[in-house]
Image 1: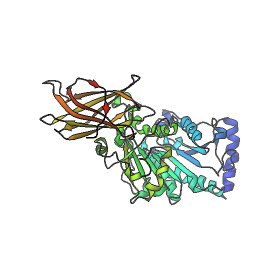
Image 2: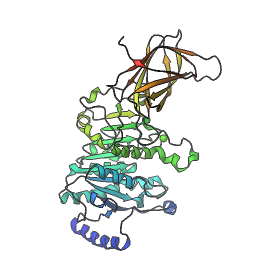
Image 3: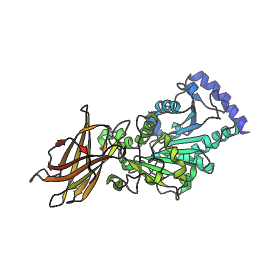
Image 4: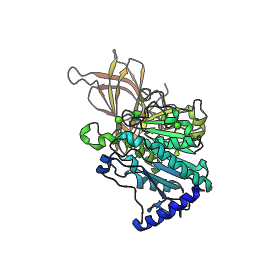
Length: 450
Ligand SMILES: [Ca+2]
Ligand SMILES: [Ca+2]
């Protein structure tokens, strides 16, 4: 019965699609639709390597391009308050298809997601999930394996993916949640949100846990970008308009896409809290041996066997990023032993210069560092560039006081060690005095074993 029904839709849809649009586009709506709200309608747009630039509207599994023996990725967007199509569609399709020969289905439920009333969009999520279940059922009937079904859900879409996965008792291959929606979902039981039992492997990127995103861990592995709250480069005030509301939330999508460009890897470190991570307490990757620490994004499933066998199967990992793509930061520990008579508290600005004169700067100012006489302070510093040969290091120390006497920081030993590339030689400098707010530049030497 189901097949016949699909066939019927296919005929009608096919004729209509042919007459109206050569290459079907994502439903574009305007603010007027958002004001009156929209009734749910789900449209499926298929892209493969054979039709990269022109989607096929999927109305039955009798499609021209769908090959169910290959992996299929269904991408489900979230709440669309203004009705505009998501900006990431074309880029996502191109990057995924260049990574792997797969089917990509963009699930367009813009009619249903577009409304100024978030709770109305949210109330459609289960209906979208039920529709997608019929689509996947049909693919399975045609020979697809649930193992090779991978859903990527953004915001509300992450919970939609969870609902679909739940209907298959967690047998779908993988679900990735990109900043899963928080409002109306926070604190809900497993059946009412994305959770690790919804697929064989569930990975999540959090980028706006203080506003639109979900705060707690929802997957086998949860990546918290810059702590998960606010993203560098995003406006911090409401005067930036729409960007202010969505920039943090949307960053999860751009971080995921960066993983497909492969220009650098975003490595994340297991830790209980972001504060501990920032204070350098979680730079160890021993737990993943012989693998390195997990890398965010498309290839995160390389860690699947370790992560899913863990008991409980929950891993929270943290990482910092730069402001723009490719977002990678290269991390170093800066170990400092001081010999001031008193305890000194302050911030450190560290600048690295390579032999060609390129510079990268890091400000360790998330928390005041405490320098106690003759004990080592280890500061975590991230740079947006990675230099193989560091020619010069500049340090500036600040207590944050603009008036009063200038303090000195007497350094017995400074050691710079790469966390990103731990095999690199450690660089040192001995016996230095930093005058507050004054940059001191020096040539590092290989560390002596003392
Ligand atoms: Ca669930
Ligand atoms: Ca935020």
